[in-house]
Image 1 (tube, rainbow, N blue to C red):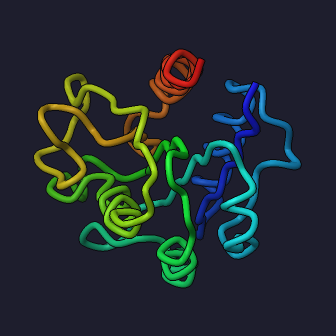
Image 2 (cartoon, rainbow, N blue to C red):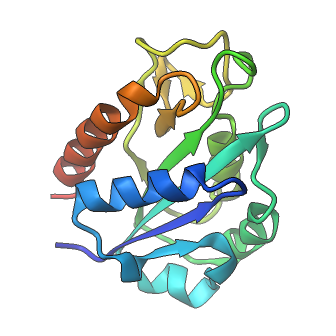
Length: 168
């Protein structure tokens, strides 16, 4: 199995908890789950696959720690490396910018040479709009642990199966 590394940005602890749930579903040990503040160009380049997650703030903004992380992403050579994205958001209060933190991460990786995996159909989510939706699919796993926490475990389990099949 490829070495998968998760980097997350979390202010209130929700995204950190979701990152741990994703790690468990994928069989990733806690030694490969890190806060984005611990990310370096070398650790990015040394991983076989990356899973990057952020909580979404305000009108679709990244979690604060990711702003320095984005600069590191832009400097890393990730040619051919699979990258999966996830974000958490509030589909009822911020339904028009739901989980848009993923868009910022994808944009930061535009010139990295990575390959994006793990898109998820947008149907079944309660939101009104998002730049993180392309062709009817979220560009990664969207999680609303505020209003749809009862769906998070199943969404993560299904996404983990998808990620493992896409990287087999």
